Image (cartoon, rainbow, N blue to C red):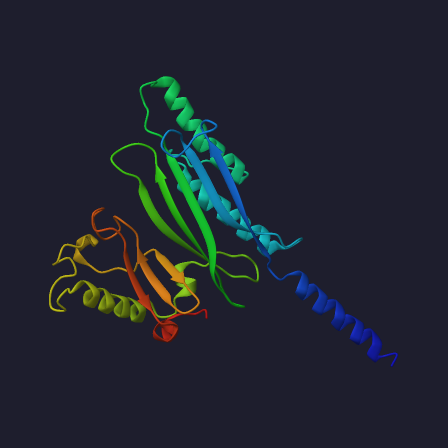
Length: 251
């Protein structure tokens, strides 16, 4: 027993540490308006709803939170140099403050701006934490921009996976997605990928920048303007997990 007890105690410590590292998230909302009270018709509004990792003393949680904040800041910023925000409060405040400064310089500018970002966890496993960001921004012009971003993390350390780290067989996945795209948009297999109006560079198919991992699906997502016009909107290609499993490194 004198030998086994220290070993048992050590195992308890390991289990306890593992539990402490379990990622826990809390949905938080940050909002700023140009005037109060107001409604969406007469004031600028910035709203960010985001899952925030609250796990104490966790390198993974800290890394995920920093990456999410940086991404949201980049989406909201319309400057050449993205805002280096230290908090979501600073992000929404900066957006509204930019509008207020514009109003001072150009008093007749009356169109309110809008920034809306909503993030949610779409998939979680020992190998993968997938967070989807749905966003809309309008800062003048004919129309705003609506888009989707998929951030896929290693839950062990909070590292944001690159496409090469996610994809095991790029050519195989590319062939699968192109076949689905051609079928969905009725593009003949013997014609160029742009033959029906798409806008791939040099008429050559390429995988999208956005991959969404859902509980029961994998989505290859082309945002507006990525391969088609604004009027055509985004292109979403949905696969079952079984269809894409042979081409991915993570499950």
